[in-house]
Image (cartoon, rainbow, N blue to C red; front, side, top):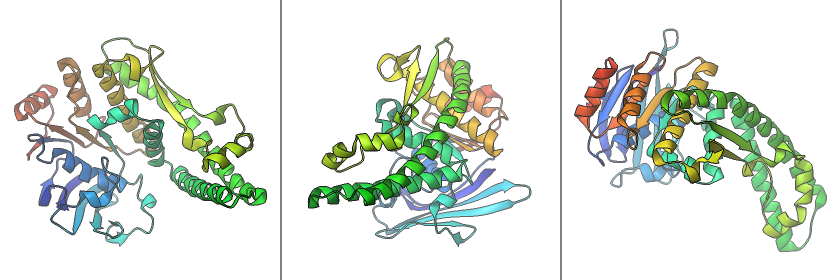
Length: 361
């Protein structure tokens, strides 16, 4: 699978631009602020139905326009051939997403068809940010290969919202309808236990792949690990809800459940956030994303698009060259790499011994 070409209309700083891509290595070169990251984000849209950087779609419309449109032509394989994917967002309207001119009724039906992996400086939020950012990231990984998981997660969040509304109503009206609450508890427990089992299974099989990549990229022999933290690992979900019943009434929201889970990052048994240098953190995150790539590739038997946005910052020269040579290998499929320095990028590709297409923006 690879992206043959893309057209951007009123998307961020692009008014009307076309790009044709190599099915292997694509260098995107330009000064800061010219739109390198925006181009990668447009590709991410066609894969995941949303921006990698901005949760509000309408903020990605060029400020002088009333809509943005992204159109891409993908070659899936020799049997299925070429498909067209489009994303259109008008101001004050819902997002329209189409596959071969047919509009989706549910965006979730598209997730996983055209898998992608983005590596960006913003990934530092996974280390320095909240558990929510880590949880959402790993949810997105699982969702790209397990549609049942994504559907269950959507249903869990709907039930959670209803339960929180009910808690607020109980508090405002001064009464507690236990039977009504039990109906929502049953649904929350059912969906929550299913999600917890999927996350536990995922992290057990994902972590060895992550460790392999870290050991390949890092010249030092650090011991890294990812731990899945959930109260459901040692507690019954129903019992947790019963124990926090009064607390939830006072807070007016559900204080326990898989929406509070976290993933903890360690290096040599110490938290990566507190005890690792910026270079070590960068290596940790790149290894995480390369493992993400391989995990999807092995499960789906498709090489995801690999988008590398300014990944060379805070990496020493040896790691930069190793990373470039690694993604240039046939193990990877179509790769997009952004950089500010044209000569350096050309030199890296030349030393890696790979053919490439350079896009100067």
